[in-house]
Image 1: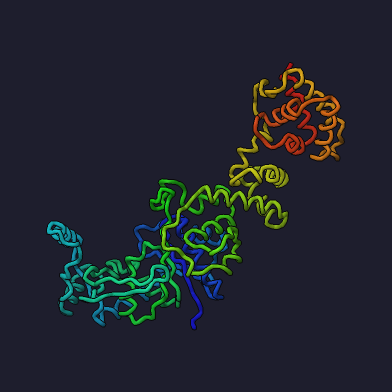
Image 2 (image 1 turned 30 degrees about the vertical axis):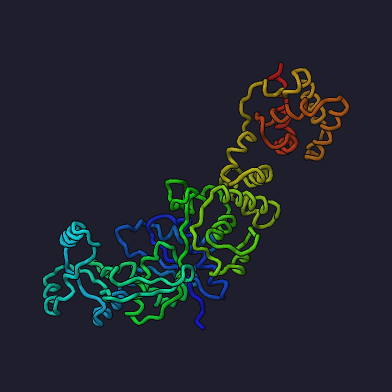
Length: 475
């Protein structure tokens, strides 16, 4: 049995789409599950749509996610001789022919067919050109493409791992172009030739390529190549069941990474888009996915990309990593530093304080801004609705006095809480008389982490300063 070899073959026309990540991930998981090899190929034959640097960005993003190629990454633009050789073979064996028709003529034929309510397709004007006529046109410098000759009156069948048997009648297919006039191959030829040359055993790709499958089957047969196993993945959908697109939110993986989404959360969530483990388990690290992943459990129905669910996964993973206090936690602190613009010590403190309250790291800066610069707030905010000005002033003054006696080395949540609880009990004050104004004094907000957490975070000197400012507001 051949070793399993899969590939991810993106076009460098922009960012890595969430759908592209899923294709890459499923291909990677299937290869690793079977102790096989995962490869990356850059499909850059459509020269007009290339975005400079996009290939490097795609590879960098995949590397960042831990999806790495087992072999040197191939670019199709460096393999033109291979495609030309395959094209020559198809022409020599009468499976393909040169077409010299101009774009103007093709457009005219198309318009005429539409006028007559016919399905637009090439009229084979150049199919029966003699070798002499062909040579003469080539010597005259006429531009040409190479078309694959669709067999007449034939049923083309293919087997897909997800969708089962697919049959198409050849009359519904056009003599499609396999080599363009600039000598670059089309996707159809290049992908088939490359998958054969790279010994790919499983072609895993999006459902949008299903209509191309009969053409690829014809090419495999004509070139006398063994066919791989085809696996077409269901479409990714917006919550309204329309095709996932940028119009309804971010679809670029880079956008999510730049917003502070955790790699583990992205991988976990994307793995569940169209694949079901068959149990109630929701959390999967990559090693777990490799063990449990199966092509048989890929669904046919479109998978809905739900940002709320991704946010939930991300929040849960942030909490999990914070609880670990290991190398991964230190990496999370490094990421938090970048979002906060603070040093590692400050970033760690902010992460510990807000880690259980955020969906992504990008929320840290806005949520914690008050810790580094107290916002202005009205003095009325200091008085709890069930308290009054007198009790609030008393509570803050008492807190200032007892907290000032705590030594810097003892400044901790336990010590602060015990101290406040003791004085509150002795003076028969309610929580709203002291905890509420302390919260507002420390944050300038009505909703924040607990006042005890805030006091510890700020440190003794800054905490006492903010309490004094609050007392002055009430005078």
